[in-house]
Image 1 (tube, rainbow, N blue to C red):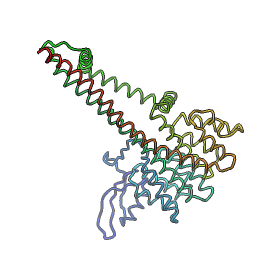
Image 2: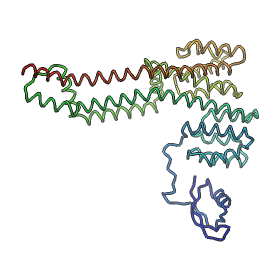
Image 3: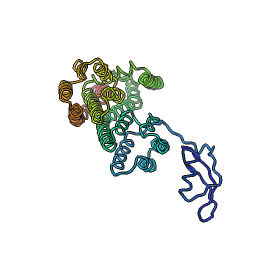
Image 4: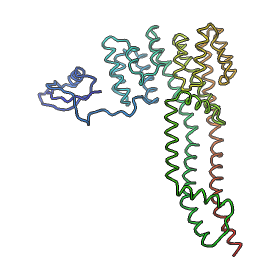
Length: 401
């Protein structure tokens, strides 16, 4: 969005100066006139204060879910796509989405179709949205397509938040454990050890081990922090730029004890929900599989989806590659196979998605019940180990006295 400085007159004849946001000068003039201002001079602002700064160009999932739901409601109420886009651009709190919608509105007013306009903003509008809108325009069922898309986005958002909630608690406890242990080893242990040395106490092996850890952390804390920073930076770089590394990270997550089952169910729910939505919107099956591979969010699952697409191109069935993969349980393959045979594939996939979304709910509740006492137990054992290392020499001194 460009910022323009203007000088103009109001309807009462008063001179007014200020700034206005608009994609171009023509729309800036139109915007001012709609506000009752007749611009005499209007130029693009060069001030750094008026330069829009965006950290990342994407839209938060929550903001996009709200946009889809509101867009579906407006279209179903009989509002035109242009007017609906204008309304949503003015009221959205997301700056990247606002900017994109204003440009989409301008393109649609100039005669471009909505799907052609949104495809110009791939970082804002995902492939799922673009292709479903393209299908809705072709079939004339834009309102139904948007309604289905809004439900899908809401379900995916809800399931994502539940998975995040399951991971947040153990992550917080893990950080807390590191902070407590570091505090004990850096500040508490050295003060006690100095007292033991003065008294000439004989230190047991558990105390000797703790002292060595404390000395290492105190002397080489900078090396430890640098190691962590390098390890995290290297991981992020490889995760973003190395497809093979990225694939094996997701593979390891799916094979994790305790949490692996949750990640698998979440991935299956997302995939089947996306496929059901695309099939229900009359998107061709090969195109739907290509889209699902991109939006699955899991390269392990995406690889199997790509194999399914290749299988269909060769005249085989959708489920043949699924049956060979460990990631697809018999329930998924059996119901999908029935859907293929009976012509109700979208219905079957929707039921599978419902099932696994409920499974994610149950798994999250179970994990919360199991992980909380487990993490507290681990924290107690670690802290107890350090406390025992401090207390044992004290007991030896009391016995000598």
